[in-house]
Image (cartoon, rainbow, N blue to C red):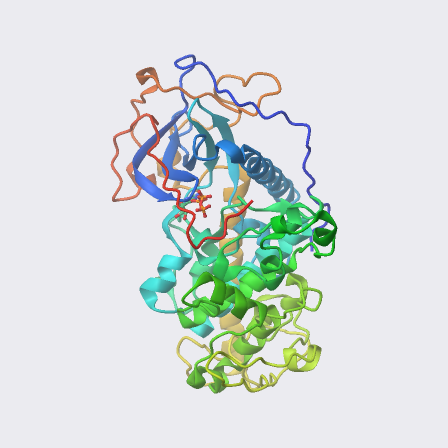
Length: 509
Ligand SMILES: Nc1ncnc2c1ncn2[C@@H]1O[C@H](COP(=O)(O)OP(=O)(O)OP(=O)(O)O)[C@@H](O)[C@H]1O
């Protein structure tokens, strides 16, 4: 686990005004349509015209966040601090023996500035489409090849973030993106029979709009924030605090890291089953189900022995008592995901803590989770609960001879290391990996060095213009642009209006 917490300086001034229109040329141009939009922002693909590096440009409309500038400021500061921490770790070549490195899977911020209309965040570019869309498209994800590996990756991310003293507060499928693969030399699913879906290496946790350092104070951790279906019971207890007297509020326990673990349980459940555990007809009913840990369980799934480790895992995440809920570091030892981590000691709800499964809304109760057949330290990756040897869960084929298993294990480790190296380089260089013939002749420079200097003490790192002078004449090299996107460049002008509807998403400050 990485230590040295990130703590944010509260002294950085927040400048409400941007540069004078037309004063400077913009070094970023956008192309193509929207990558996505949220309550507060639109996200577009952009390119640094000097380096030709591609990024995602998140434009937060100042009008939309008029009274919430403090929130955006917190997000920018946090993302900048996290990106800095990641850079330091990369420089130190920080590596573990785990399959995933948590810090590789956090969306990075490379630059930020503001215009008269927007606050602009220049971030790592991800593919269009998020984990929510993938789950909906597939119906649900494959338990052995996808849910386990995706969950393991998310546990690594949470271990990293919590180790940096950061609570995310909005873990959900919509906030998990997929890294854009531009290095064609990376191992690909189609190249072989891998025991898990390699796209697990592409997961990127985004949207730090609600994230906060754990030492932000009790008032921050009594905020009723997040997304209704994913919020933990201790956040539900913070609803309507405004109606209480200050002394009554004092009695409400501030929440912490454990809210992310609850949300991870919801996400894991959603990935495996394709529907949400706590989702009723009305928001009020949903909150009641959360408070009573009353989640829906289909009878067939409940009794499916292949799902016992899954049920055991989500049950731990859904512990009503946040102090009993395991932290990410402990979850790594759970049989459902422990094969993805270097040390595999035993942790299961039936043995670790006496968790009694709650009855669900249909009045059925769940069986106590089955014990795993193996325990102790792992010597090689065994992705199917088998006591006999290596089994490929993708094929559920025959048990392999130890020698073949060892060869496959070595191949798998090679794939893992290649992918980890690719992710590591992406993070360090702040630009995307492209084939040598593409980069040949290209100007190589850091995003941060080019462009006019920001005013002293300013939040701005770059310049921005809404005048046509900044129109770029360069085209994105075909190999780094998405097939579907246009090669013509447009200036970022009048960002599209942002949709803002405060319906069932519990965004309350
Ligand atoms: N770096 C990125 N690369 C590609 N697409 C992205 C990127 N960041 C965000 N998106 C897309 O844009 C959408 C909105 O982004 P984001 O969730 O950060 O905005 P928001 O306004 O904070 O949203 P929310 O409504 O969750 O508060 C995402 O769901 C995703 O589809």
